[in-house]
Length: 248
Image (cartoon, rainbow, N blue to C red; front, side):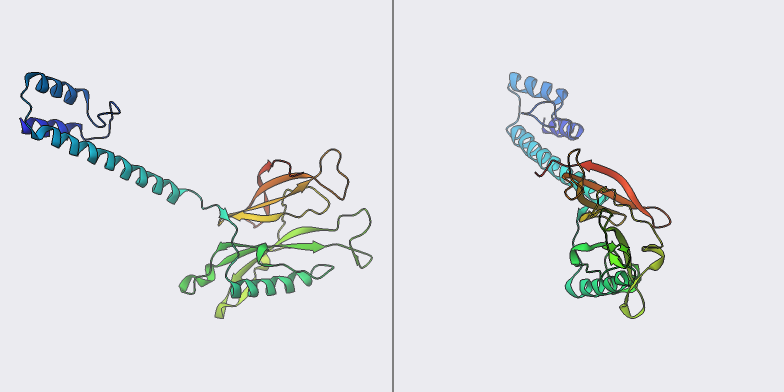
């Protein structure tokens, strides 16, 4: 009799729950239990065996759910909140970008750690040269030698790509930074500034404000979130744009 129970249980062990009371128990096993009980011929160990299998089935279900969730997380793109690199690394990146941007812009550039997106983090080992950081900075336009001007855009947001060279020196990749590449953050306003909020290895997400129908030039009020990606030449452009709930 016990052999019959074990045989049925082995055949019905896969997770195909037929009822909430007997998970993993198929119609065949249920029929056998009914006939066994009606005839009064079920051995005392039967209920213990079935109970143990049911508990094991529930545990197996939980394990498989956890494994499935882990698999999904492991293959999904790692879109995370933009986290600046550690203190010393951030300081070196900021110094390099400020010097580079100030040499191009009509006014001094002052980026901070909040402007840095870690595309590939620094590994002091053999892969140190793969480290890549994208830094958003504001280019100021000049009008007769003066930054900005009445009724004109004050500037534009641009990008600088920082890599690591010999001796762990941080440097600008000029082939993938402004003005060698274009950077369209997809935010249409006079200020044209996007706040860095998220990034992956291949994308950057920014938030900013665009003009509503009744907005003055000074005061765009429509909040948007834009996902940016670079093409093969390093030019960045919007790949997705969402209007957020108004913050007014």
